[in-house]
Length: 65
Image 1 (cartoon, rainbow, N blue to C red):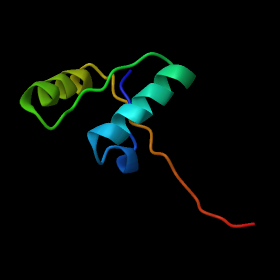
Image 2 (image 1 turned 90 degrees about the horizontal axis):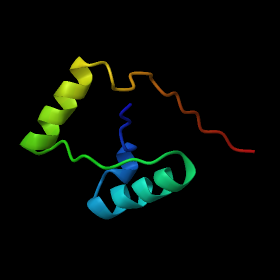
Image 3 (image 1 turned 45 degrees about the vertical axis):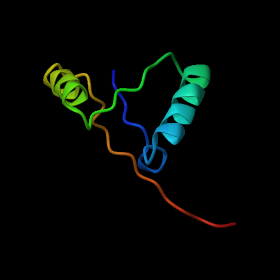
Image 4 (image 1 turned 90 degrees about the vertical axis):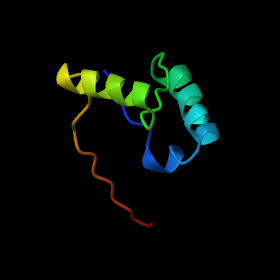
């Protein structure tokens, strides 16, 4: 499966790599694929065609105690 880096953490390479490091330690092994370039975009399109992208919407709520 392929999961997107959260928008706030995808702003730059350093933040994305930090997310990857934590993901690998706490969730499961994974790699970053930069989809802004041709090679990454083609990889993403292939993954989408094979149904390997997570398509669930995530709902967030803010609240204060």
